[in-house]
Length: 254
Image (cartoon, rainbow, N blue to C red):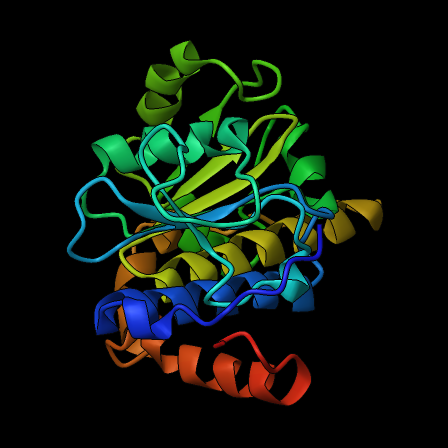
């Protein structure tokens, strides 16, 4: 389907429209960084001021094509709450709905099937403390064993148990998942997660002995992150990422 979509801006609150723009930007950035998997995987975001309403990608659109107006509003079951010519993949929302239902502070859930992420998720030892990037992930990381394609509701309790209060979840034999209070937070977390996995795969490919970061350094990662970003967190990098999109992949905010 290649439907022409009218802008939804006149019918949205300012808060919803800004969320739509940021979420569309996140989808485009995932494509720009080559983390996408054709039309599969999802990024979901809560609709501000609307309890139980979320935005997700129209199923069948490439991530590089997604715009603010093309995002589909759904409920906790993945059912459409607004008119859209595009379908939604309810099975793809299983993971997201599980997280949103119990982590009410989470505004965005981001899930990928990258080669590096899946490669590390298949390793028995999981993520190793091999890089500066890894220390920011390891302090807030959970693991969830593979149970097949995420289609069954009975998997949800185990998934949210394994995520706990963490920001990062490694889905064994499957991929990576991050959560954040904002879309920018979830994206920055995924950048760290994916980069950490890529470094690990390359370090292991070298064939030599590997040096691990000391646990006491990992324990101070949160304080170090706050210091290096001057307390701004993801807001330090998000405006620059949007400028990059404006140059290389414009049109997401329509």
